[in-house]
Length: 393
Image (cartoon, rainbow, N blue to C red; front, side):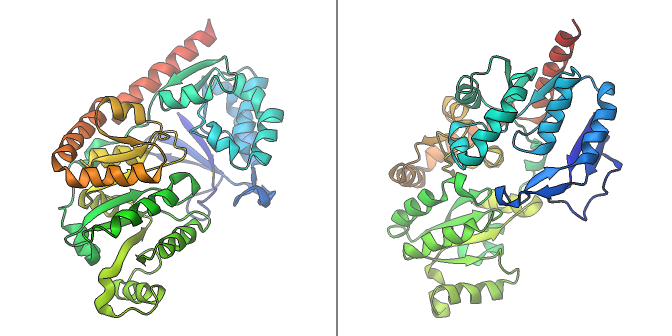
């Protein structure tokens, strides 16, 4: 197996245009030129080095797996595969959901209909991560090629020795003796943070023992909108993503809250952690009480798997791709993207520990049965083999 990728977001951190070995996999990161920055932060990633390398090596591969739709590397790979009759799989990863396409449709739909449509329809198979994604995308786009559903997976060994629950309160003192409601994910328009904040605000006024913990990377300044909504609802927040020193965080919190006295720090209702990885992420998962992801569009939901692996009861919207699996396993609460439903679901779990315990156990079992790396890898290997064999006949 060989992986080709551009250095978008990795400038200066990886070698460019040369092969390296990562866990036994050959990986080549290619440089890129950037045009039309108005269409996104990285513009249009034109990589002649990647195109030339793939063209030279194409005949040595049995199958090409393209893991995106809306960028130059995907277009170049699909074009070369179609031109030189090489089987390829496309994985859209939620980007073909109707709701997602409608966002900035002015740039997406012309590109898709005029350019990418033919390459999507020429793929040997479209790989979806959930049945929900397949149902919403395949027929809607008029696709006739093979559709395969293989989920994402996690390495369960990473969730075997979790930090003690009280560790979270030691890192973020405001959380001691609180019921922690966790949002973990990228902070952007898709995640439903607008309705989560409003639902939480309804509860926070009645329940002094709850606290909203928002962990994730702020994308394109969207976090400032979230903070404004928090202030608009009369709540204060602290932001550990701004400064790493807890003393400075308190000062920053008090400044943003309008000069409160130190004794009023208890009035803070929301904590931003910034992006967390590794042990830090496990601490917030192990120390929280409820996980909430009310996304407007989410093809899968890796953070949901991680939460269930840590024994957290989850509340997700019916726009998160794995909502059917969670409903069938009684592994969480599935709601519409409605403020009232989010608030009611959180309150119900807070008031019924036995329901939390049952969903916690069911969620962990669901991950073990369907979403481990081994099971996912077996599914992908089988799909690869079938496509290659069919192509050779």
